[in-house]
Image (cartoon, rainbow, N blue to C red; front, side, top):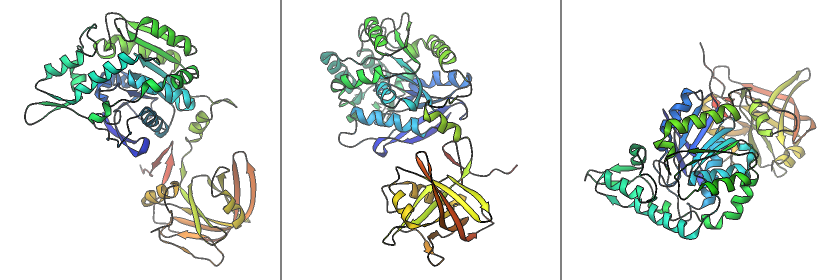
Length: 444
């Protein structure tokens, strides 16, 4: 098991535990409100043994994830967190989620379908009765108190669903609590996280998102679950095109842990049938995320491309779309998205420089990839050639160019530059980029 951290909505840090090999197909596992990521550890280990890379994530304000400020636990923030986790992975992940986590997954995947490979939704609904919702929220809030014993915690948890079997896999639920020096137990999280995500206001949004889930979906419930009834699940199945239903007999809200072997068998069967381990395929006109993932299998260097605007102010951005073109004349190219705020300036400048970064310049790559900073502040750079473009000090190599040609390239413009000056440092290793992550050279 490896602990990971993701930057969620509003830069809230999200803690996660990963099981398996990172090169295997990813499965992101989201618990319900009040639970920690440890809830999924048993299933995650089973997924890893089956050749999947399982990532169990704490909700914001839960477990080891960061706390949010005022209003930071609204539904939009949770949805933004899941989108951020999925977007940070090198390929589309399958999502397993229960309760509140399942509701978050419906919105995230329904509204941005290219992020996700499929869903396993446990105890999911998109309809909320005010009385039931307020009762469950009040019961959840009681977890934020101080408990004299583990037995007292389990009694409080069981009281959430008094007509169902009491949870058996207590260690997974107790993982949300820590025992202090005084022997008492306290919930490991921000009590404000129980203030409510405003689900009563989200029904229309969730109905619209569920109807757009054009991907493999299975709906799993314990047959004795009183809140998520069989009628509710079948109603949800009618909304989500092509979804399947699986019920676990004799279980209520905690089917995924109390009947873990049965749950894992259902989940693995669904994955092998609907999201099998095989090469992903892109067919012209299909999901662009798949093509992007395929292109990400080509490792590249990392550059900062620079120029100056009409007033002489330097501008620059991080790019890995760089390649050599010709030696006679000496030509290189990079491509710039038509949506870039810098496009017009590069087109008008008639010049640019490409600065190839070395392994120690990853912070510089991150800086020039951001939009919310003055990129050149406190950066060592200079105009090395008269009429040239900004050159970043210490770069592995820099190519100062005049614009030789600019060509339409779909959603990008391809800039070809004629190299007028070049400088390079032969004793450093390059910063590399592969499958959405920075890499370094490995010498056998």
